[in-house]
Image (cartoon, rainbow, N blue to C red; front, side):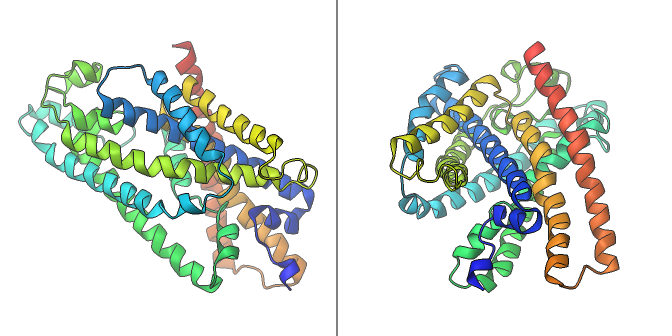
Length: 363
């Protein structure tokens, strides 16, 4: 029955837990995309800062980018913009490839260092205790947690039965790229790696001791071409991704039955609503210029809910309602393990991220 078909993630929550389930998912999805787009704006400002070479403050670039992104978010139909997404995909793949190439080339930087310094360059275990693992897990959840988009995309496909294969191929490609960036990036830069990878790609420390200084004090070899091309690749991808992700926020709000008539696309109220959410992302980017911190915080809070708790718990409830076969014992054990990992991410990852935010503001 077409009327009972789940077309959005909120429909999934509605089917499982009624209005409360739909509200939980809506809040989590809204918070997640606002956090993601705030992170995108942080990264875009950092890319433009490096490309320009003008030495302007990061926040100036945030304010310069703001009206451009606002204009993109005011478009009623993003069809034309979505057709450019192959360029965004090329930008994402290109940036990952360039990071791996540059990290591999920069192995020469530390090959002549004393053995003691070389031994301190890489660590087998986290140096900051288990709390940091929460943020790491949150980042992984954020990178691969796509549950919020799946129902809407699948329902719009001409051949929905092809979606599982397309999803597996996409996640396999993303996993391969992220794994390569993680392994080769850490091999090349080790514990000297900066939160903004472009800084590590642009300058190298003269020795391991110097790596603890601000990167603009580093006296090792410098590079500009590959970091600049990487910045352009990242910027291309994010300039296209930002309005598309924000559209998920707009559609979620304007589809609410209580305000659907007032927030029809093209109305003044709709433009004001969109402007308000764009302003929130700008405010976050102005307050926090640390992308890993912002991304880790929003991922730790929202991704365990969207990627684990809701699919497992709500899915089980829906199967009971329609009399479908429940998960096997082996699958339930696997679900239990995943549930524990997600709980660790939610509790420890959120705590670690909040501590990072507090430290940022208190110095």
